[in-house]
Image (spheres, one colour):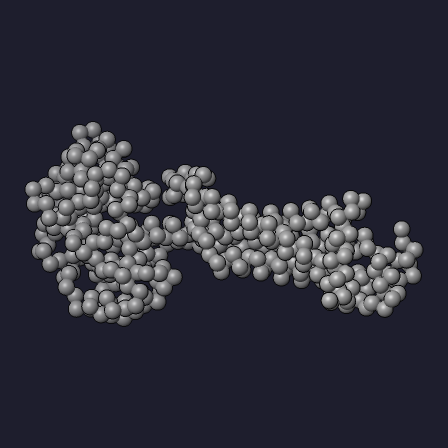
Length: 407
């Protein structure tokens, strides 16, 4: 057996002696490492989960990439384009593109008997992917785009509460244009995505044909196309490929271009995690340094005796590093059990709630990432072991003669 390993095990076992000062210190070190690992694991899983949930909600609502005509203004009055552009077939072949759907927007004023509200109608047709909204409809059903008798609408829970509208009710929308058109709508369903500020308070879904009629477009004209992709991490690369396929007078915008405030806010969360991990690693490293110093002081006489018998500084340093590694490993193991256990409990029960108005989601999200978990464990281990080289130098300063007289 390796001598330094044998010595580290003997010292570790001797710490179980209740008279030893190192015994409670080692327990404190293990507890400190465990709490640090729990904090780091939860921080990474919560932040990545938060980013994933919000990104999925925003892209589910508005898609990942938008193709439309170049505009000189930021209004919702869009220039129409044909819905059968030749480049669409080329775009469909791009790896990562899931669906392409037509869309059109029209601003208006919603009026009930007692209230008025500025809204934006989003026209959809048979190409629209309802996958995201099917799980967000809280009452009623999605609209029937083929209903010729009534103009069906899907409104948000926020608008429903604010305007006192429920499924089956009717309301009017006035369009601000030269011919001052007005249309009557039937509330077919109510949705709730939790994206109140930028989306739920603004958008109402209706058939594309209605917007085409109000704008005096023909049935082949749309405002543009929305693309959904497999992985948001490939957004920039896919958008560049799409841009190369479209005409020179066509604009391509990503969801990050359209709503930079949301994604910039999400990116700021990465900085918070980095700061937290750095601080916790420093605390964990300091705890391990203190523990190792106490272990060295507690075993000064054995160190002097070993030196007198011919043991060199490298072997003794290796002995105490292996002892520290054993404590560190136990702390990591305990921290992973607690951290991953709490994360799993949150996924199953959602017992930690959030204010959906402020955070866009109603409970703390968790995202299990194997790379993230491994990185935290390996990074913590390496950082602590590197910091432990500092007190290890103290061993070389211990004199065998003086240490044998040490009491």
